Amino acid sequence: MDWNSPEIDELIRRALAEDVGFGDVTCLATIPAAAVAHARIIAKSPLVCAGLPIAERVFRALEAGVAVQLLAQDGDAVEKGRELAKIHGHARTILSGERTALNLLAHLSGIATLTHQFVERLAGTNAKIRDTRKTAPGLRALEKYSVRMGGGTNHRIGLYDAILLKENHIAVAGGVKPALDQAHAYVSSQMKPQQMTAYEATGAPRGNPANTSLPIQIELRDERELREALEAGAESVLLDNMAPEAAKTCVQLARSLRRDLVIEISGGITLANARAYAETGADFLSSGALTHSAPAADLTLLMDTIAAK
Image (cartoon, rainbow, N blue to C red; front, side):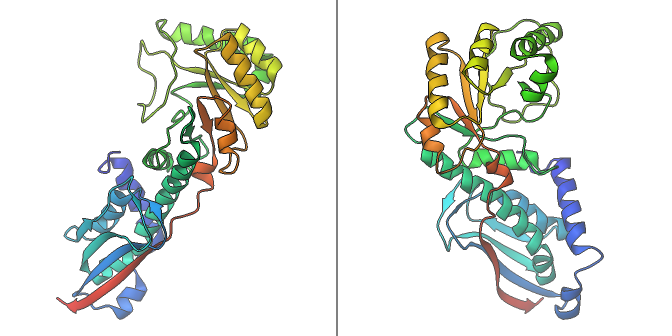
């Protein structure tokens, strides 16, 4: 993650403009302009860190000379009471940036924490947990980064770096085979032929470079559609909204016919049932909940000392 990118700069600018507006009137009314302070960001519950660098940048956007010492790294699993950062600067700077910094850090760490819980559930199986495109608009890169910090993997970054044939595409195309045929024809017309492999996007560039083959995955609802997809040359399938027993039957069938097939299961994956789905033998489980339903991590900022400068 490039924390100095224009996109991060703009996100911080908009977030601070939304919260601070034309001025933090509480600070203006009660805190002397010259007052300096020491403060700490503390985890109030166990969590996996994600977003510490952007929290630091929030304070620096308000005061270039503020001193921020990060005491943990993104990806660290920390216990309740752990100090994550120390901040020294003008008291107004710290208090005005507090909520924006904590909002970002809590949201991103919440995603990393939930992802880590899924990873723990899948330990000892072949399956990996990965995310979806169900992200907050404008925050996708950060949210998918947080999934990686929690030990998960990313699905496609957007609509540009992989083909995923879902039920509506299949319906309009006229069925599983026509949809796959059209997708294969499109890829062949756009790029030089190249072996299709399993993909895990970790920050693919916008667009698809020449000579790079777009992955093609197709969403399937039952065994009949799976058989049709295999006959049509599918390289990667997504078993959607199946009960664990039905998914296991489909995985076993697929493995018996195509050992190198990439198999993903999606739809209703939770911490409670993730293990059962993983034990079907699938390569991936995907869950939109990683990004759209992760509880924010519990954090606080405490000011230790305030003194006139």
